[in-house]
View (cartoon, one colour):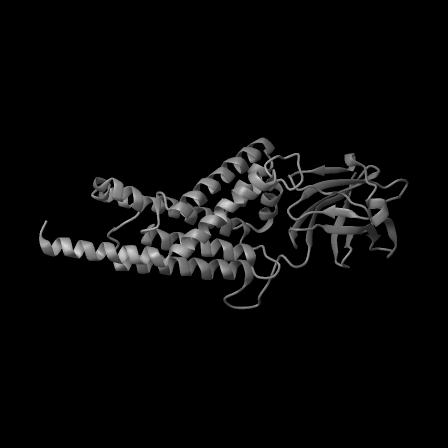
Amino acid sequence: MSTDTTERSRITESHFTTAALFTLPVRLVIGWTYFSAFWRRVGIADKLDPNLPGYVGEKFNHFLPNALGIGPIIEYLLTHPALLAAAMTVFTIVEGIVGFCVIIGLFTRVMSVAILGLAFGILLSAGWLGTTCLDEWQIGILGVACGLMLFLSGGGRYSVDHVLSDRFPKLVQRKWLRWLTSGEISVPKPAVLAGSVAVLALALFTNQHFHGGVYGPLHNKSVAPQIEITDASIAGNSLQFQVFRTEGADVYGSFLIGVSVRDDTTGDTVIQLDGTQLSRLPEAAIANRYVAKVKPGAHSLVVPLGAKAQLTIPTGKTRWDATHRYTLVLTDISGATWEQAVSIGA
């Protein structure tokens, strides 16, 4: 190898070392961000047990209503609890390994790709959540950008990759290994620009899709509860309908304090249940579909974000006229109401 070539290689390696030094704070923090997910669920509290409060599967359930493109995958896992529990365990272990390796700088470039992939998954599934600062969207898109940046810079001097390359100099000579660890790699400037523009385009697209953040009107689906009602019908002596909570804060449920049926023909209310009556609904009256469950609360019927359930409410001796039009009305404690036409069975 000529002197000029050696000198150019030394200068290029120095540039990579400097770049990695500048990205060190990002590497440490983004590494902890993912390792802490593992630590919270395993070290501080057991959030992987489906039978304990705080089960991470319920959080996963919250992503479902407005996930972008991967809703069917989320729903499939939610309707297969054993598979969901296994997936949450594997996902948590992967986050722990990736986060730890990024912190210490081991296989930095491989782990940066993993960071990018994990962040992309968060962005698509939960980017719509966040009551104040578009929380999950920011976590997702910044994770994608940080993953790309760490891939380009590598781990640098303060990394296990660097320690191993000093101890085993022949490793440095294997260019393919640098693409997995750290050190000098040949990345064309147009490729860096293209990758950066792609991340920016992803940021603009998802920001607009989830929040209307590029051009108005702005919207935040995490602020107020929204419930979809389907399949409302009278079958025999029972009122049946399905509820699906699609919007609102993920940290608490919608609290239904009223379920009524209005006869639109006469204007009369033919069925009326208040919060106290709803809080006493028997377990058999609620058929939950997912991990997040609709259930009676102290003074209302609680509908968590992402919960979907079929409700069956006895109508007693109420007489139904097939020539009349009936409307089901659900009332939240906030005052919000949702309506759906009721069909009369044969």
